Amino acid sequence: MSIVGLLTFANFNNVMAQDATPAEGTEQVAANDEAPAADAAVAEPAAEEETVAAAPADDTKSFHQMLKEKYIQGGAGWMTPVLLCLIFGMALIIERILYLNMATTNVKKLLEGIEENAKKGDWKGARELCANTRGPVASIFVQGLDRIDQGLDNVEKAVTSYGGVQMARLENNMTWIGLFIALAPSFGFLGTVVGMVQAFDDIETAGDISPTVVAGGMKVALLTTIFGLITAIILQIFYNYILTKIESLVDQMEDGSISFMDILVKYHK
Image 1 (cartoon, one colour):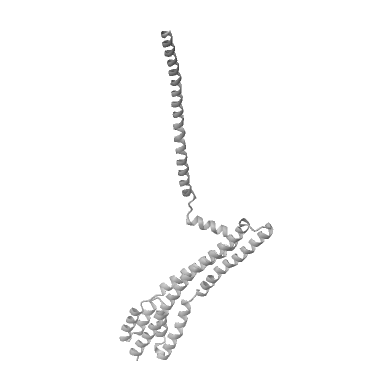
Image 2 (cartoon, rainbow, N blue to C red; image 1 turned 45 degrees about the horizontal axis):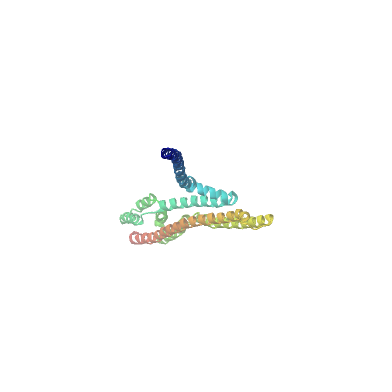
């Protein structure tokens, strides 16, 4: 009986050991299956983060593209007049800046040359010097020297009269620039009014007040106003610069004319 009991106990232990071995294998297989799943779970958020990080780079637009997009959204019918005001206004501004820069003269050096010729009594040489010098100041001096034989009174009248002519030439096209400065925001405000009317028409048609219905008209209203004001600001800055340049040239003309008449009074006999 003892021997039988020992054999039975040994067989029972073998059976338990065989049952434990498959269980352990099953746990290892399950652990191996869970490891790739955990790696995949970690990899998916990382891929999502990379996708989110790459998305802003794809959505980035250049300034030119954004400007073109807003121009189209604002409506070509109202944005085009504002754009034309900017184009024509800048064209006239560039023309005025070039003209005024070419009209700038070294008045001090010119007066010194006139005085040297006047000391020698060479009024013809003084006139040639002025004729070969560009600018409104030199042109005024030419008109005065052309009448040197008619007396100083006639010379002074000629200098004064031709000074007014040169001043008007300096201010040429300034009226048109001022017109475009006024028109640009006016077109913008007109687009605003039309956009608001469109928004109310859409509300009346839909019978409901919702952001989707109002958005189209409001966008036209705001964009046309923004572009009109920006255009007016740009043109106004250059307009004031040109006015400052004109005032500087006018001061040169007045001071130069006084010095010119002093030279004539001193050396003309």
